[in-house]
Image 1: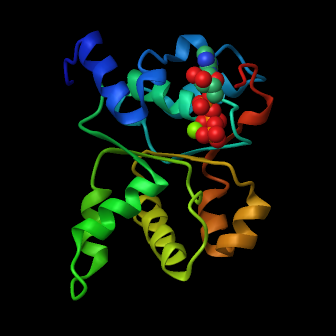
Image 2 (image 1 turned 90 degrees about the vertical axis):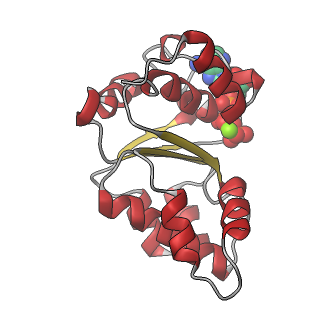
Length: 188
Ligand SMILES: Nc1ncnc2c1ncn2[C@@H]1O[C@H](COP(=O)(O)OP(=O)(O)OP(=O)(O)O)[C@@H](O)[C@H]1O
Ligand SMILES: [Mg+2]
């Protein structure tokens, strides 16, 4: 659909994820206890792509690498892919609305892309404001059923404890594709 060249895509991977991830590709992934199959199924074909893919697991197990690989795989097939780290999303949200303004409008704008990827979800520490925003963000994407990929260091129990049941139940919903990166073979 987009016609980006290999060089374009590497440049975009570099700017979204960093130089380390500029040539990440799904071909490097291997079977990884069936997770490759789950991810390929989620990926589907063209417009079949929908719903949430949640990659959880400890630091250094390849979550960001997988995001960058999926990005490479998707970017020519969809109208737009937007990548945020948790920190980035909040930085852009703060920059985008005035004290009097409604942050929801800004948040909706930030998330209004065909595919949204959020790396390190919940990594910047809990506050009530952050909990409210993350819940809204998940809800916006969950309701629209547009393809969303989330990585997080937190497991379901930790998300529930830190961010509450409403966030945990959306993130770990039965409909979502969930993979656990701790068992993946390539480690930092
Ligand atoms: N399939 C892979 N092939 C080659 N290298 C990989 C692969 N998966 C991960 N790596 C490498 O392993 C290292 C750790 O991966 P990555 O940064 O993606 O982990 P992470 O789970 O995102 O960690 P954190 O939770 O700290 O952000 C990186 O140098 C990455 O390039
Ligand atoms: Mg990472």
